[in-house]
Length: 275
Image 1: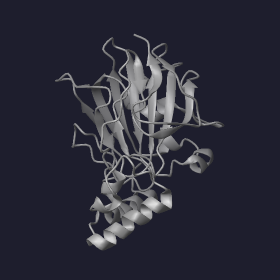
Image 2: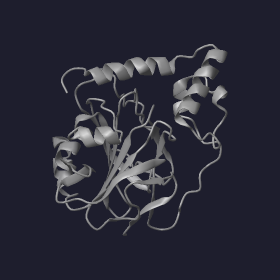
Image 3: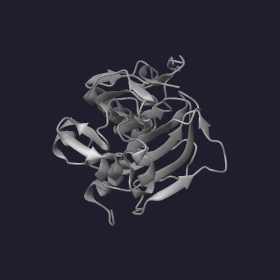
């Protein structure tokens, strides 16, 4: 992407509204309207009126920690989300949704060209967060992060109609790509995909990464000088509205234990890591 797309402009404008702290009565009305309109389940969170901005409500923190499946080999869902597609790659081809394919070479870009080949015929899981879902994402397994690529792009919606309509949507959209390894050297990629009205995607341990911020060139962040281990269930960051998390693993490493069109919750097992 060489210039700002209309979807980026719309998202930045909405982000300013969502970040604005209105007088308490007006903010409470906005928050309650959002909760009622989308049917948010607030039983695990603070009351809507306690959030000073709409973005604070979007990125709400759990009042109590979720149970985490700590069994050996259990890879957990990093988010509350719908599994839109999952299964095995056909060489480099992944499914956006049935009938809509794309290449992981394009998704991961030339920067990860060699690494993408190591994923051929591996496994993948697509996790879609709707606007009413819990918007924080967590580490699905104990992994060492060796690099992150911020790839600017458009911000098309990532809901089911858009997935069926827009070719190579994940390739077109802005994304943050994490290259990770298990303790035994198994390769896993976590791809955070931006979407319309997602003004920001954050990385909890690296605040240099700024998304939808008028930056048009990709930026690579490497962590070769330190052993950056993130443990299963640890906070990885947050979306400012619903979006998508993609998981990819090299052949033989990850056995998928979920199905498409299934709603999963952060903390529960969705795959098994063979180590």
